[in-house]
Image 1: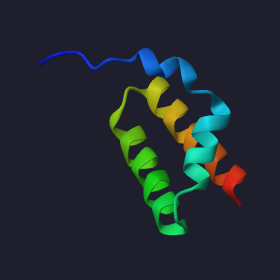
Image 2: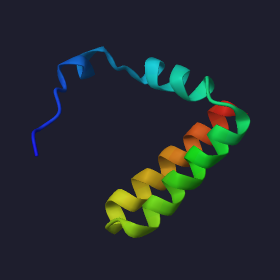
Image 3: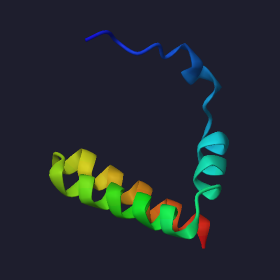
Image 4: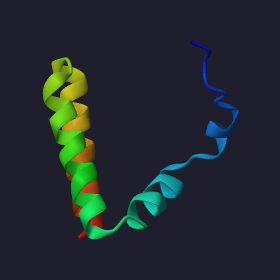
Length: 63
């Protein structure tokens, strides 16, 4: 399997990520937050805590 071309990743900033999440419907936002939290449970503790914190921060910012 070939590696994806990540050269466009330089254009991604916290603001562009937040704008992308804001453009989701309320249902889409809920599903994303649920996915992040469900994924966090399956990760090693340090990564899981970070994923859960990201979900918490996104939820606060989107309210």
